[in-house]
Image 1 (cartoon, rainbow, N blue to C red):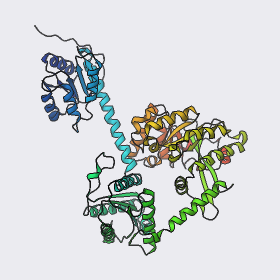
Image 2 (image 1 turned 135 degrees about the vertical axis):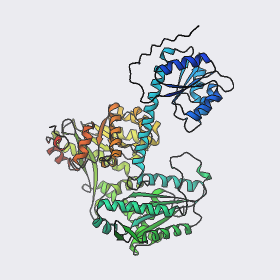
Image 3 (image 1 turned 135 degrees about the horizontal axis):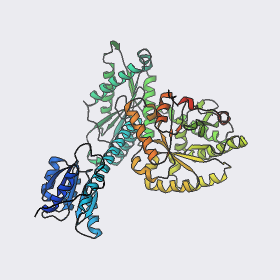
Image 4 (image 1 turned 90 degrees about the vertical axis):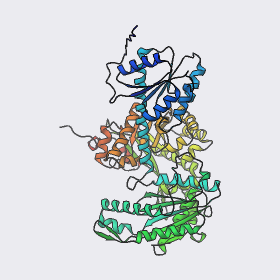
Length: 612
């Protein structure tokens, strides 16, 4: 008696996969294998057959199929054990696994998912729908792989310097914090060397930007090669391993920016190792260098701080290595200096600035607000502003927010500064009476320290109730602080939305697991980090920004691109449906009355390309 199979696949009219997918079918019943093969091959897929779990594992290792159709009830090695074994291999972590079980209870299905199954089917199998289900699982796997690749790209751009491929400033801070924690936990020692090329501007100006960048790559390569003579790199900071067993010295070279390089040296026996490394750095850079027919002489200054002797907090170690670096420069450059307490004038300056900041919060004219317009790309008009605090010191002049914001956090003044900002924004708008339209959104940055304080929500709700604003307030939070405790952040974000705030993720794309968690967070807006905007113009930068914009569009979120400085950047962002632009191309941060004067300006000529 011949076996006739009638297939009624509802998606036969769809396009076939780009390449035939290979499906591993594992079942001890030859009839099931035959039916599965007929269904899948008729849909354009290749089929491998295994009669038991042992053969399935062997075929998987040899052939690397795209999907596994796995029976649960088999002799020798059941489907749960096979599934678990595949998931424990490096190449089996993401392959889709469809299990088939004859059990009707939830316990069998739960056991399958616990073993690592992607989806399940209960017997008897509806063969007419099998190829459709397999295709959907394959497409889902492809989408997941693409998403993972985008996350890798985002992480690379966020944590690595595009010029030298070395870890960047963000990665440096993370690795330093982790290394200091390990130093304390395992009672070891580590060193931080901060390297600054001497008088690099004298070389940069005649060479120009492109050749200077090439020179920095040469310097990075030379340093990296010489450091490997001392010790290997440390483990991947994002890798989950027991670092208590890592007792050998490791060295990581990083480029935080400009002509600066940082070096973290872990598990040192004594400061002599750091002396040897610093000496090598000076010798390596002093060595003759012929670069593009230019005979160059380089030198560097090196500042060194040691943990735990000079502190166990990243801020303290960075500050003290910087103090030592400044001392090396003041001593004539082309040398290294270790930090010691005699170099601690910087600490006194910090204490003075803390006291001055306290006075500034009480002063009527030292702190003030400026507002950077945000332009809606559809209307060409200003749709909102970002409120930014500034400090004009009576003796020192303008103090950068990059300096006084961390100072406020470290001195316990951040809550007071946050309250001051809300009140001043309210005062500024009320002073204009009805001139400031109620439809404009006001974006205000929240400090990570504010967001993590226990009474944060209550304090902010009280502050909102005291304001007379008719405008929507959008609170900006960095992705890193939200992801530091995703569950707690989710609760706080929902409470903030209930209180009437809009929510924006600032510097989007630079944090952890952002794509997987984003759908759960009640946010309104993504702000593309200006580092990504600055990287537009090359394929890597373009693809990253396109991915973020496509994700935001799929989730129906507004997108603000920060740091837009050129028309080419604005054109690209507008073409790919970025709905809000912010940056110097459109307007610098300005007093609020100046914003009012610009409300009728049509900015669309700055980013729209006229069609011929």
